[in-house]
Length: 333
Image 1 (cartoon, rainbow, N blue to C red):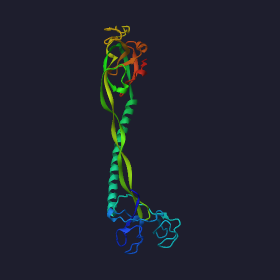
Image 2: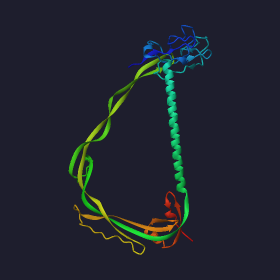
Image 3: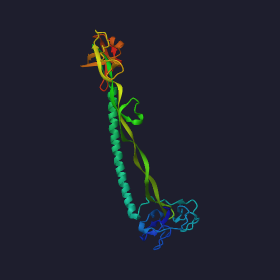
Image 4: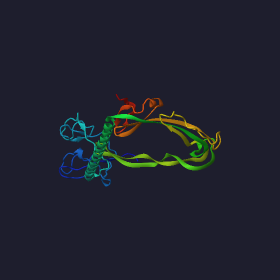
């Protein structure tokens, strides 16, 4: 739709004559009062008057002396005859969908309601932010508030664990283009892999713009509309032989027993279905403490674990959030 030009409307403030034409009626035909450009408004559909052939020179200028609205190219005011040099443009009317003063008032009420809702959202956001800040403050206080405790070494524990893996069939699913080459017992199904946006027409709306000279333009603004279309591909379900953890064997002891790895018993070795092998190894060295009315423990390297003599005293700090500070333990004098 090409741009169309129509006349704005205005109501006389002195004799209450309504729906005067913004370009044609610079003065009220009933009482002669000058047009107040700030009172212009957009007409309803049935009140629209075309302004075809009207030459647009820019937004009207307000006379510095008498505040009469004049054409932008006027050099001397049509109301008082004063020079128009230094005059400012009239303010433009916003809200192109408004139809007369009644709609303008309604729009103002809607704006107030929207402002009220926005203020409510801001208030809730501030309350939420305040609660979050308080929670963070509590966590910070707990994180950095510690108390000193006297501890004694109550015991030592060590644990060594070996994982056992079995070479067996594993059920897996992948897109067929990324399926491993050694897959077997393959079944395929067509599935949605992704989505793509495809054109789906246009969304259009009629936009009105005050041109500031008693007229307004009207044209359709259209934006492309898109819809999501599924993109299909083949997904494969298959079996594949892989080393999988099936169990573990563990050895445990205290300071009196030398740490040792458990004996591993494998059902069958080799690269066959059901064959087994040793997997990852894990070890853990724990020192037990008593003191402060509660049992506590720390995990160390084997070398440091041995440095804690049974019954020896240590000073430490306990945090309500993180517990005993194992790295900061010091010998008690």
